[in-house]
Length: 398
Image (cartoon, rainbow, N blue to C red):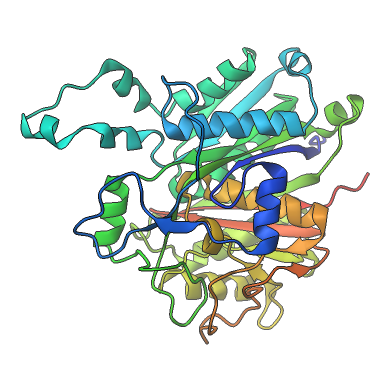
């Protein structure tokens, strides 16, 4: 059986540098930084207090947590961007796959110190409901009125967004569904912040991927959803095609709780290119995992050198320098940036860059976006526990 081609027809984004296709795209082009002081909990006692928060996000449904509301908003924007009627989607089988790390766990921060001082706090039943990550894709389905869909949550930590896109690609290729809403949503909470702080992985001021003076991650929040369609379904309804999902690959090594194994990252990247039928020299841009940590960046650069050859690695951008590490949404944000780069002809920058680390001998598109025409973009994502995922997106050609 010949696998059906899968295309991207809609983009929806909530981020700290801009919302929607145009807002997010403008933020990437301008090299905006979303970083600022944390507002949602008291940071007394922490030496660092920076995060990329989404400004002025509307309240939405009071029965949903913030991550779910952001994901629902991104999905609604994506469907609008795809210019597809909900009636068309309700008439065919579909999929909603959402990646996340913590879901709506931030809502636990509403428990006050007074409640905690009284012993085990009373947990509101409505609050308890929000802890179930399975509610995120179900909320999207309910908001759009879609009933003939599979709704799945993929909690594959920082690689979850790529897992969600790969899941959708498989479902469309096989003929199981005609469309898929794929992406991720996340909002860090005090617990996650404290954990990464104790690990010494948080940057005091800014995320500086590949920089000699990099000091770690800055958290971010938001959501991104892509509308994927079978090519025949998209053409039949006269859709505007933004890009094509060419292939993906997953590996899991369980080598170390936080440090990916280079050999398995290399295997994942090569597997994605093989699945896409793309040669390394055809790739015009890599959107790196690029966390800005001392251990991750040189490892990722070494894996890219294995895949592309020394001195032959294409430009490598790390958008976490702008939007922070949005955890389960990070790879979905990167896939969205990849589509925009292909469609609009530019390379997103790696901002906050001062001096390139000799262990990271790449062109990281420092500080300023660049005009370019990447026909193929490789998106890399690495999750704790060795969950690696890579997606290849490219320019659509009939």
